[in-house]
Every structure is written in structure tokens, then in C-alpha cells.
Image (cartoon, rainbow, N blue to C red; front, side, top):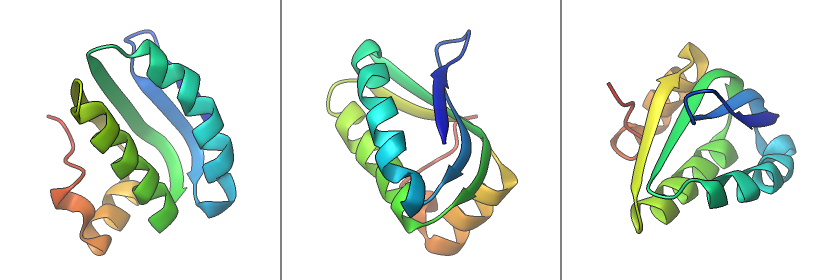
Length: 97
């Protein structure tokens, strides 16, 4: 899992967002989230696998950010979209249009 801020300021995730990668993702996210003052945008277009622990991480980010600012998911890969729909997280993690 690799997370970088892209040219638009979105946090771009690349690789699997599964239990085996959550610790790495969390440690990469902390300094990046500190830089996002009012709005946090996630780009999940390059996430090739996700499980419940990945969804829980996304939900935790959303809850944390929404208490002080705006949270959006800019783009989402087909694999993530399918898992979100199957898991019932679509009401929690809405893809921004």
C-alpha cells in the first residue's frame, strides 16, 4: 500500500487496502491527514483489493475528518466499489460526483 498526495491535493491510495496493509496505510496517512485542513479527498482508483479492515479505516478517516471539515471520495476502483456495495458500506462511504 502506498499513499501520496497528488497534484490536486487528493490522497491517492495505490495497492491493496487489506488487513495485511492497514498498519502501513495508517502510518502513511497520519502525516498526510495533518496537512488536510478543511477538506480531505481520497482517490481510491488504484486500490486493487480491499477487505473489511480497509473499509473500517476509510470509515474512521471519514468520521475524524467530518468532525472538523469535509470528506469526499473522488474516484473509486471497480473492485472497491463492488466490495462497498456487497458489504453495505455504500450509505457510509458515498462516492463524490
